[in-house]
Image 1 (cartoon, rainbow, N blue to C red):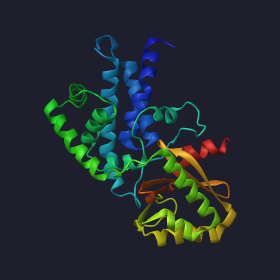
Image 2 (tube, rainbow, N blue to C red; image 1 turned 60 degrees about the vertical axis):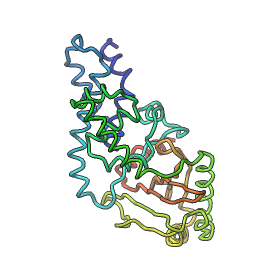
Image 3 (cartoon, rainbow, N blue to C red; image 1 turned 30 degrees about the horizontal axis):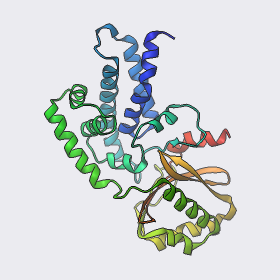
Image 4 (cartoon, rainbow, N blue to C red; image 1 turned 30 degrees about the vertical axis):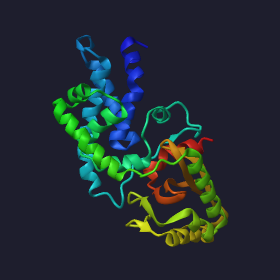
Length: 296
């Protein structure tokens, strides 16, 4: 391996982390990093003050361009658009870009969903400053803007993110305990226990991408959602299995039907109750997780 390849690989986790958080898609993030590699391979490296700064700038700007196109496409997306989930932690995944993402902060599905509110440049400025701890002069050089403009971008983005983020931080043990109880109640078809674990105004958001059926709008209400999970148990019984895993750095549930991955579900919790469930059912976005479990 030559020096140029070693240098690029040493920065790959950071580059991949930026691209994934910008785009919410592993496939697109990998394409951006590959494009950056091709540009790096052809670049006059002896003219760079910092290889890392050059690579971060290239990946960030490529991600901004892709996100501008993606935002237009997502306006015509069938149903709710949600990011592609990534297995982390004790998932048993090998040392892949997915596993490397675990080493940085803020990749929860809820966090990525909030980032969708931001314009591409604001998203980039916020991530570089608040997640990857770049100085404002670095952010300014990366985006080709003044420091003052970048401070304003980050300030406004922080306000938008703060408004949309979960209000409370939940201990990991609490998160796991509630999800185990939820999976157990779903496996027993206990409507009463399911309802007891959810807030009265709990929401369910589904992403089928037009590939599989999902509700066209957000469903809400503990009674309604308990009935939904109960109905699945009544219809399929032991064919349904849930497994507790780490999804994007937080406890989540994978639901299998007849051994096939049907959804990846993440949960927001407040006051020991589930307040929001995000169910990713789009098979294209589940493909990487399904592959991990099919090889076990």
